[in-house]
Length: 218
Image (cartoon, rainbow, N blue to C red; front, side):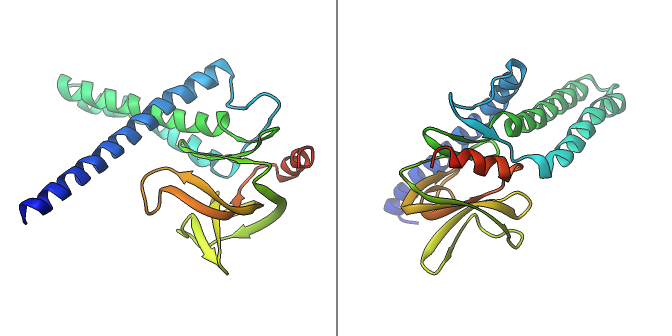
C-alpha cells in the first residue's frame, strides 16, 4: 500500500470508528434518559400534540426478554459465586443488560409518534426521530401493507422512494409528501444518513385515533 493511500485510508477508518463510538454513547445515554422519563411520567410529546404508540406487536417479546434477564442474574450469580472477580463482572453485565432492556421498553412507551401543530413526528426504537411538517405533507391515509422480511427501510418503485418504519413487517399509515423531502436515519451511508423520500409508511397501534388527530390539523 502506498504512503498516499495509507494516509487517505487511516483518517477515513478513524472517522468511521469515531462516528460509531459516538453513536453508541448517544444510544447508551438515551437508555437512561428513557428510564428517567418513565419514572417522572414525562413522555416526549410536544405541547398541544397527541402521542400514539407503536409498541403493541413487540410488547410481549420485550417483557419476555426482561423477565429472562432478571431471572438470569441470580442463577449466574449462584454458578460463579466461588470466583469473586468473575462474579462481579457477571453481575455487572447482567444488571447492565437488564437496564438496557428496560430502557428500550421505556423508549417505546415514552417516545411515541406524535401529531400536533408542528406536524407529524415519526419515531422508531431509540434513534429514529423525524419531524414532517404540515407544509411537507400532501396527504395521510390509513393503508395497511405487509412487506417481505428484511426488506430495506427505503425502497424505490416507479421513481418514488418510500421510507417504511415497520413493526413486524407491517405498516398501517401512509404519509404522502408534497415533494422529495430529506429525512435522516441513524448511522452512516448508504443505509443511514440523509435520504430524500416521497412518502413515509409507519405502524400505529391506534390508526383510528391517529387519523382523527391528523384531521384536526391537516
